[in-house]
Amino acid sequence: QVQLVESGGGLVQPGGSLRLSCVASERIFTILYWYRQAPGKQRELVASITRGGTTNYADSVKGRFTISRDNAKNTAYLQMNSLKPEDTAVYSCNALILGYDTWGRGTQVTVSS
Image 1 (cartoon, rainbow, N blue to C red):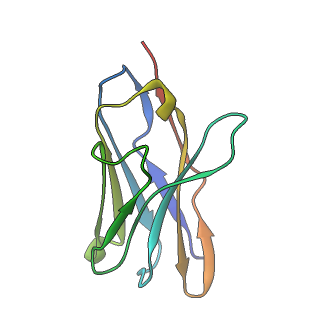
Image 2 (image 1 turned 90 degrees about the vertical axis):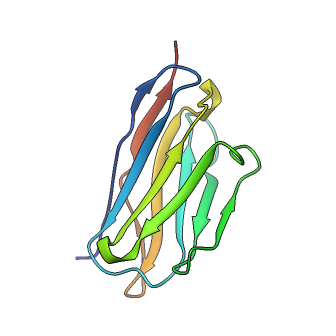
């Protein structure tokens, strides 16, 4: 069964940092995406990374978030710095794995003082 498992969320004060991880059960040969969804809001694409390392970011996180991946470990990361209350959301990773559009269950990030 192909799956993605996120970890690393938690409660952090404004201006703080968190590093999220996304571990895949299989090798990922395609683009990997990080999404987030806040209560009452639509899901938002945060960042993406190709297998070769080309990245893209939502304007709202540019300069603060960094996406990376370790293909040997089937793992992707989202380093989040200078966090703001509006970054509060459930963060999920997504990728096409063995032809399946695969989603993790998500990890909660709460930015609050």
